[in-house]
Image 1 (tube, rainbow, N blue to C red):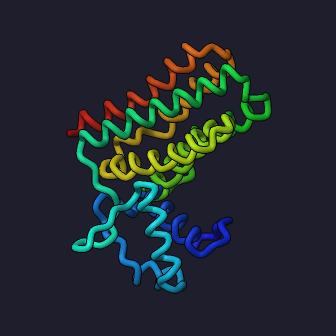
Image 2: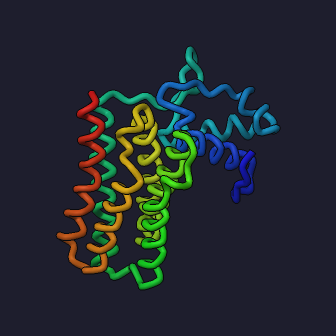
Length: 221
């Protein structure tokens, strides 16, 4: 079991399920059996049940009496809607960062470090699961840093759930995730635009980044 910073058992289970999504081990429609997770993590069923409730509230899993808990399934129309909501909220985040001058030099350095780590990611992976996990983790880390830097906690909370919802679908075909080099360059362009403190440039690079995901997903339909 990986080491997690979270303290409560239910939070550990939530982090465990999310790590499986980040690695692509859990995909859209996969069932989540409480007894199996309880056994894997050597914990009782109660925190697993609470974790399922939390993940359901975040829109990452769904529950039905007939099928039990399973990883979220989305239709193409629903996927597009999630993209639209995420883009709208993240544009608001970027607007706050630029207009309120939220990012300082140390923030830019941290973001550059994440970008450089992504650029060098391919050489650290020996198989597809490691590749998917690292690529998704670094992508989330970059965007989460921006969300948190804006001090917009409600938006950040919603955006994290939306990130995982889209990731569940994109993990069905890892080609839609892009490559370490491609994503690193896209993040670097967003970062360089942020340093100019010019909103139109920032939004242009962000929209290009997101449309690359949308185009990759829907050309596969």
